[in-house]
Length: 370
Image 1 (cartoon, one colour):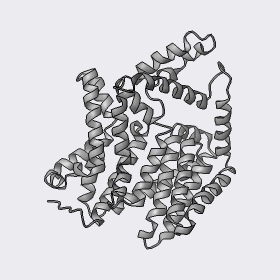
Image 2 (tube, helix red, strand yellow; image 1 turned 60 degrees about the vertical axis):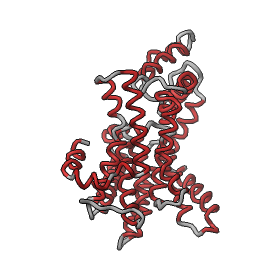
Image 3 (cartoon, helix red, strand yellow; image 1 turned 45 degrees about the vertical axis):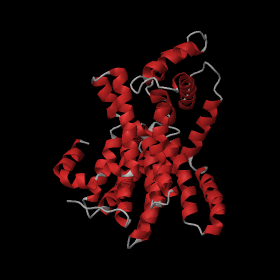
Image 4 (tube, helix red, strand yellow; image 1 turned 90 degrees about the vertical axis):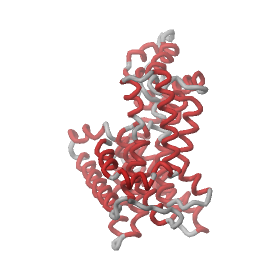
């Protein structure tokens, strides 16, 4: 972010002329960030805790800065080329990890971001292929990345996002009269293919077993997620009006856990687990509702849905942008993607790049870098 800020400062006159903050999607993000900042400063004051909390949302500033910088370059495709090459290389590492337990253990902690990121890159590779002289290269890359998510990464978020992207791509690339059939059949085929993956079967079995775990036994990752969800829903009932504070989720979560578990002779053992002090519920929507109340959730949804709103208003919005926004929205059901470093940065970068491409091809948008 520092490097981007310095680059933007060096081209300050041109950035000012472009005014990226006036782009509706970027404006919605900045309004949400302003609310989060005012809410946090009101509750916490101006201190390191407040600054650290707001830094978790710096992608909302990074995106318009990137949008301006993309407008100032005539070689925007280099960004996407580098992204695809990196994604393919990172995907290859996951296949090597199937034969190297040490490498596999290192990659496990990144399986959520890996699955999400490679699923999005697979979709974009397919969408952007027709812009290249050899489109088959990107289509092969898309297939490779999709197979990597299914067979080499045991991240449930990636599996779900990939399935949604398959459905959306089927809709986009099918003749109008076949779209509904393709929307059903191609994701179904992807599910059947996924059943041949040990990674998918393992995570599916764990999810089913975790949901049926008897109370008081050691919780699996699924069991922990369910408890985090129950606690978050209880907190949402208490704080849905004004919010508990963007810096205070960990505090209020520990408090609600004490209330729910302390007097239970079986569940009281949960209070010794690290997840009781979790600072997010692994659901971006609930995190917004508990942290900033209904206004925060509404502003977050407006930002997230801004591309779709523009499309419904008749504005030019690319199917790639709508697809990436859809992937992010689905991922936010299972993780706090905006406050997760890798996922948040990837989305901010793609948002800026896709908007810059749309603006450049839209005659209604006038870009005049100084």
